Length: 143
Image (cartoon, rainbow, N blue to C red; front, side):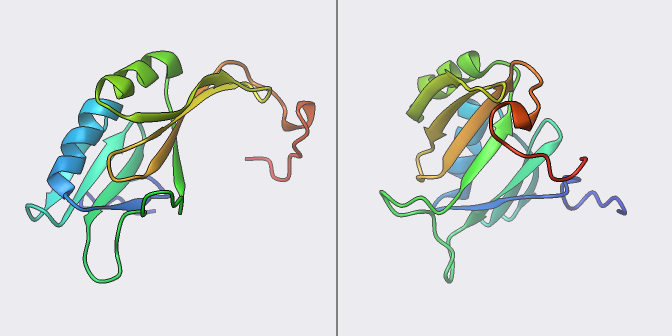
């Protein structure tokens, strides 16, 4: 793939819609640790990075809108070094914690939070490398 400084280098880039792009960028940075890399207009879009991942924050227009209360249309999973510390940071910034940090048989400690616009985020810390077959999964490809 050719590099282009005008788009994140990640292969998959979720686009999440927020009623106030600037407020979302500030909150996602403070609560979750995202960093703004590109701003497109004052309130139109922003590209954010987290490690080698990325997300685009877009404004409401046309048929684009954030989830309605009680509606889950998607979830974003982000890998972190320390899920408990990350959860506390999010909590300090009024993230709604939907699931406290929990250790799972597949080797991950995860917690789930909801941001002010209603998007759900799962943050995952790897505790140990576990083959999917050990917990009931099935390896299908070698990647």
